[in-house]
Length: 353
Image (cartoon, rainbow, N blue to C red; front, side, top):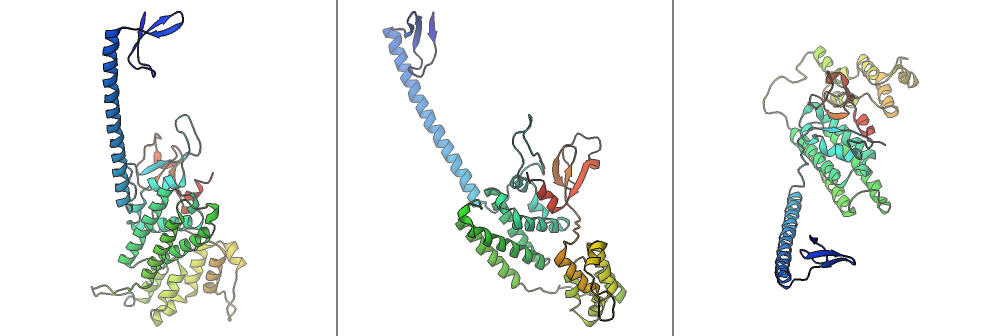
């Protein structure tokens, strides 16, 4: 019985099975027609191969050009959440990395929200301190793009200037340390890219140092025009002692309010525990507790309490990470009861294996 099929030695030929094995069926006419068809098929396949190859090369070139032209645009994903898994299962292979989470979560839109701004800035600072080597190439690009948007927002709104200055200084110091160890391949990417990014950071620092805060055009009641009790009430809403100290330099009345002992006592009790406060007791010349100096001493010794209006949340039922208020596919009857708010440090700890 003849066997009709393609073979790598001679595609499309007729073969018959004999005692010595498979042999090609010799027929002049069929062999001639088969040779012609085989030749035509080979030429057609070559032409299709060349066309497909040229199409693939052109498609890759277009994607590469589009990527190079849009380097300042973060990769957008339809889902605003990410599944956090730390090991391989039958359903999912591999594990989730910090760079993947940084790419998938919507940080570009988060910095435009005043409730999420401080959270994102704190997260960028923690990554700059110890997690730069954990980011992939695309995650590094997204990190710098988001940081540029943060700087442009601060230059436009003229708010949170000191916060961004500290972030840029932390990032620059970390890069100076890592670039010196480039021989050990601690950073992903060409060293020239990182040198260029360091120059960009210096340029941003100069722009922030040269910023001129302008008064609002509309004239109305200012903080100084308010009663003293309201001014003190506003100061009690500030969580950073440096803001209170700077506010006290505006006028003599604010200077008196900024030295209020009860104000600094509440600030110390808000950020630190009783045990921490007892270890750093400072007495004034009158023999009273100097809460103002105690606060700045405690800040140098212990981390301050962090509180954010909007944070990332982790669902303990389905292990999905998303922003607060974002819907995610959860099979639990009451998904909100499984949501846990994460601090920036808790977010980074999720990806330490």
